[in-house]
Image (spheres, rainbow, N blue to C red):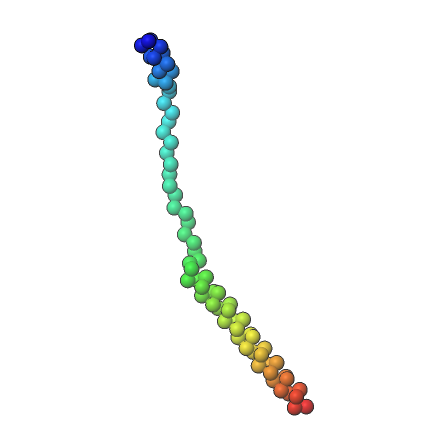
Length: 70
């Protein structure tokens, strides 16, 4: 009985050891555009669109006022 048990364990005891796996953790590169830069850019674009809308509204109001007086 002892012989059969040791025979079953024999292949597992003589396995060649594999080289260790080395894992190197690398930090991802930092984003050059931070969240503040994105927010300022978005507010700048929104401001430009708002100014264009106000100017076009004033021009349209002037044209309508002028057409009504004529």
